Image (cartoon, rainbow, N blue to C red; front, side, top):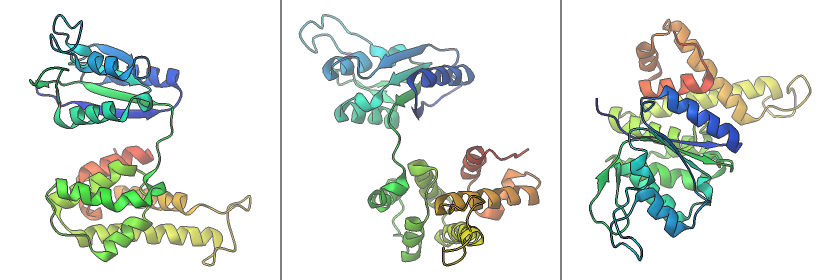
Length: 275
């Protein structure tokens, strides 16, 4: 069997994250391998880089022999890197390259080494939502499009929809949408789907607050945030489509004109019953 590395980022209370990480390791395809834990803030950058990626003999003073490093020690299993926000930008970039290429280069060596493992990072910081970083949205979308060979630019309408949509799945959802565009094409299809979600959310907001936003609201008199209304509208659209298609995910994805991977992600995100 050939495996690819898997990566996850969690934020929250450290003790709880460690427990959840062990649980994920036990349920994963890497359960038969080691479970290794390292703290990103426990060591200086120079030492942590060598500890993670290993080093070659003579790489620095005192390096009298090759050292495999923590990533190699965790090969075939799971590495939990706690407190990734404390790692330097340079080290985070090296980790990102490893996740993209599946290869490491020990300090002082030019020979890449292929490693397959489950890589889990934890952070005590809240992940900034893509909706809170509108200036990053289009550059990210264009970056993903270029990486996937999409040479046709986004239509003005799609750009407007991108900016109005609230991206509950953050960057991962944006990347999935661009990937779906690259594989299946159909900019108009994506425009129609995002428009339907936005319209349903707006209608739901109006039903609670009124079109002018001055009346209605929840039972306690507070207004419903548009983002929550949009999420509820999307969830309802998916649930109704699943019912119409008797939980046949292939048919549901075809009706909604989305990829099955996107549909699976949303089913899990909203906790929908799909079988």
